[in-house]
Length: 446
Image (cartoon, rainbow, N blue to C red):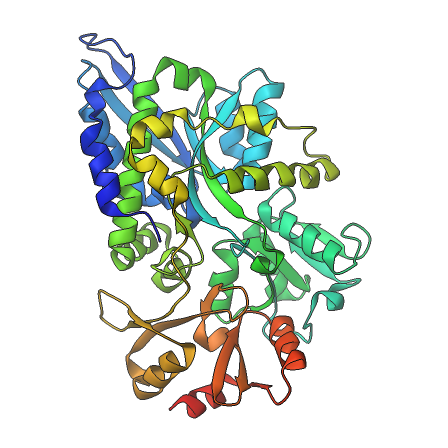
């Protein structure tokens, strides 16, 4: 299950901020804390966009009671690279980014004598579903094999590139020679896909879901097929953490509060993030909703640390880093202290089970259904009253828009898949089943 609000609230009550850290009281000085975040990388919202809108960090700082006045300078960036550059220059104290950029953050910090540390986790998916390879809506490409010799856009050094490399390797395709890789920022890659100058696009949240929702792309490969965790996290400068531990703990307490808010008010949180970023709320909810692709809790899970270690080889092969000492980079002391007794519970918590959901127009809550077929039956009866409908992939559990999924009819059972290749694999293994159009699936369910 996702983190329980009650557990977080209890931790915040048991560990008042006034007792944390070592800042001197009565100085009367003003301290500015600079936070780097990526508003449109929506799996970092509990340490960025949502946290900022809720004002929890500022409220936590106001309770420190050390005689100082605190101000927060929120700096929004498109990627993790400039956050790392600013951190190593001593200009950003706390930042959030994806797993591959986190490794680059660790490497650059050590290289320049300005070490940083991973202090908490934001959004994660234990199977890798945050990254997706998509093609144009009218593309004839249906599997990874079809990418041979094709132009594929990605952002080298990102988790999306890592997904591309690993997926191609598993398919027996040389990721360097088997395709023509275009190293592009997500927005540039999306434009290239639309213009036909790229045959496919491998990107991270929220680009695949956004392009699919807009009808500008369709999924080719679900990153969860790799069954390797991918995540986003919070990194802090070592010198900042040592000088102002109470401030860092205040941030992590605020992050826990934002996580509790997200869990308790997923629709309101999606609307808030959508307003701040310009992204459709329906896309935000796909990733950050009650049964979304991403799970949020600040605990630094051993499985995520292990995945981070496995990622090092991908970055080394791309000549973006040398060896990275992941164990020395990870430092969960501050989040353990910030969350208190609830930390152990969050460390052991599992993601919410996959579920089918409908977001009715004008509703402040979604409706869950026991099966995708039950969802389809509801949608068929309320076609004009549906804002969005979501279904989990039958094999990976990755949530996807029901009208963008690939549907398979197996007798009276209706099964959704993110990508055509996984749907075809199911059909090949189950005689009598077949791929059907969404309209056909609706008709069968009604």
